[in-house]
Amino acid sequence: MVITGPDGPPPRPGRPAAPAGTPSAVLPALSLALAWGGLAVLAWLGLTAATPPSSPALWLTTPLAAGAIAGAWLVGVRAALLLAASYRRRHPSVGSRARQSHPDLERDLDLVVVALLYPTADDFRPEVVRRSMRQSHPRVRTVILDDSRTSDARAAVDAFAASCAPASVEVVRRSSRQGFKAGNLNNYLRHHADGVGAVAILDADQEIGPDFVRVALRHLYAYREVAVVQGEVRSRPGGTRFVRDFRGMFDAHLRAMSAGRSYLGISTFAGRGALLDVAALREAGGFPEVVAEDAALTLELARRGRTVRYVPDLVSVEDAPADYTAFAVQLGKFSEGAMQFLGRGGSLLFDSRLRPARRLDVFVDLAGPLVGAVMTVSLFVFALAAAAGRAPGLPVPFGASLGILGAVPLLPEALRRFGRARQVGRARRRGPVSASSIVGAVSSVARSVAAATIFLMRGGMLYASVAVVALRAVLRVAAGNRARFVVTPKESAGPGLRSTLGRRRPELAAASAALVVAVLLTGTVTPAGVFCAVAITAVGFSWLGGRPARERAE
Image 1: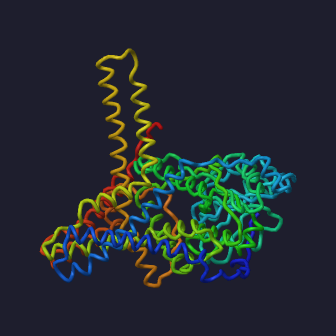
Image 2: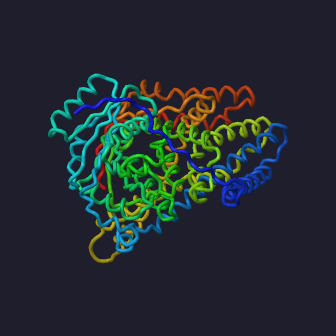
């Protein structure tokens, strides 16, 4: 059944004004400012001690570099705190206390109508939708929110709906694509969700197991304040080297950050792989129509006393970025969305309706791309001033500190790879203790350490290589342009060298410009090292990562 209708967001109810000037409103912003200021002063003292300002240019650029380094330290410290909290994770359950606190849980949940929402835009995956439709919950309807533009993609959606049982699949289209993914979801909530109690939000390539809805419903109705049940999102194996090498890193990082937030009571909606209460969505005014709709909706719900419940046993599976190009597109979209959200939500830190921990977490998280962009430019300018004044560049301890804190998101996967290598080594060592077995044990440990170390180096290079992508996104939104919701490519762009160089034009152009500026101002290419390193690693990952690869055994 194909449904068309008007589009547009549901009406947004008025929100009570946040109390101004109270300690609860001011304290998080003051704490963040003091922390950043203290770290900036510490960085400035260290930089001036190692590189005494010998010119006006160094006097001007040293504070800029110190402020950027302090921001990077804050981002790293936040990641370290969430990682530490993730190891104290408590798995949520639905027990007797929950039932007593919410007597309505005793009602027959089989009567709740749930809609599986699949927003698509020329990326429909019929086999994924078909597998997800097999739910044990009796009242599940599948709805394809089709924003496809090509006639072939629309025909594929219609053919799939026609091949299913009558009335089991609905196809909803709208007259325009305003509001990005959020606008597509709002169109359904406003015009087509009558009688639906909850919706499962799934990406076009994402599938869930048969008990996902049934189990998620029990968590959704366990407590009155729960509005979202967020499951764990995992990546399926792929056919490229990039997927083979990094999908475990993406999964481990997301799992650690989700678990850490869950322990601190500040879980967030990840934008997919979740079950949401329709009444709570309507109370919040629907999905905020911004690129970062997941973070924005989490805050809108939290302002109304509604929470997100993270349940790691609820698993959904999706594609990892097929190659470096897809990864860069995702990072660019996040960076533009973060800048858009920070620009509109400048008073976020002062909103006393939100817990201080949530305000700090969201603000620092969304400020990450801005910090990365500013740090890249500030270190380049600092290196120019230092080289022009024949002074030393960035001190080694500062570079080491940035590298260590930047590696924090990589630690869960590094530890997993270390443990996997140790298991392989133990499996190979059998028999009585002997000199050869001792040598084998030592070499096994060395191989395990090497596997973790090599991954940390490659993972760090990967995240550093997207500095220009983040910088371009930040500058684009800062210049007044609208943030764009770009659909991530589902297929690898291929390993061809010529096409690789074409896709990485922004990094190559930035490196070329940096080289010209460095030579003209200082007579040396050394200050351009940061942009040259970004360009080289981006080209390398893009060229090699798109090649076919056999998936290694986990």
